[in-house]
Length: 476
Image 1: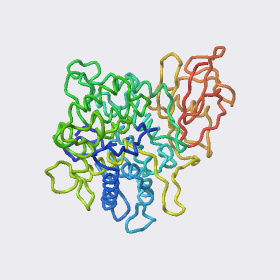
Image 2: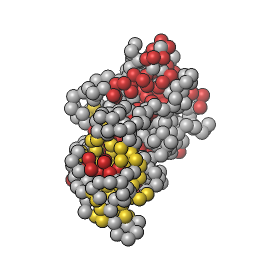
Image 3: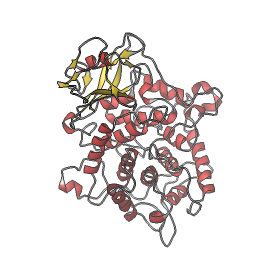
Image 4: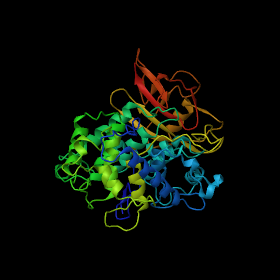
């Protein structure tokens, strides 16, 4: 199987990436009373859905494991207002879901096998929803930096092989959706713009998207789009700051509208009417602030909506959702997809404040462990449209490091290579005057931003902390 976001049954390809909107607006929490599924019905669906996901927790407190697993439960829990740290097996707080997941992500054997970019994107989205800072999971685990390592230098804007387009979509969802603990976007606009350009270039003529690359291929662009990937791509655009009035978002909305079935509110998906496809579409609409229960998505004359279809697939009081209407048992993957969508979420959500006494909203490793190898995410923008993105391997000697040491490390220990070829001065703590052969000139100088902060003069001595996402830019 190819690696594709799979929060659906195994008949779908793997990526296990379901779900993040406006990721700054990544959640649509209130629906108007005129919607066919009432607020009370949605509240009941959420309560029962959370109860079902509770039942999926293993005795050791885990949700995630090798291959396809139930870790998407974290993004569904968050959208429904439940903190992962509050989810425990039999009330045993020592085995709470957040701690167990964080421990898994910190193991040297994770992810198993030959990792691909979607492994880290999936983890970033779910760690964020669980209240684990994705860039500061542990002393040697920075999920944002791992994603940076899959940047395609020859095809700027793609992450992972460009043929697997969904790796780029979920890069946008993870990098823009998994914000800092204070709610800031940690990646620079120059990076976001490159990804958005690739998403736009892959939009099919019918207004939607598919899992594979279509850019530059007239035949592929003319092929029918997929419901699921259209929802994810919409969410990626809106999470990246694209307005829901943008022509490409409107075309995507119209594509989904054209695939809506009047009788029950389902979408005409590649695999037939099913909860996961409906959920991905609804999550895309949620992410863009487009209400899935009114206007274009309230069918006539039956008056059904995509949310109605999802709620109709839920077993009650058990709370799980079936994959297809004829199924007689719930699907764990479809249940996470459906609950997230019904709760108004996109493909991730900020972690709720825990109810467990003393449990913080966030957990993070904020200092380097001296002598322990780790990674940092770095972008270098030459101010003329050239952008380099990489994951830099560093082994700090103290609890912090410096920008100069990171740039020096990047000359020999960056993935992909070539992110930094030279830096002046080569030592000391002073102002950086030249990077990659481009020198400061008048008001145009090298500046640095960390975790989305304002750009300021770049100096070798600038302190860099564990998990910092670094953006270097030449300009005024």
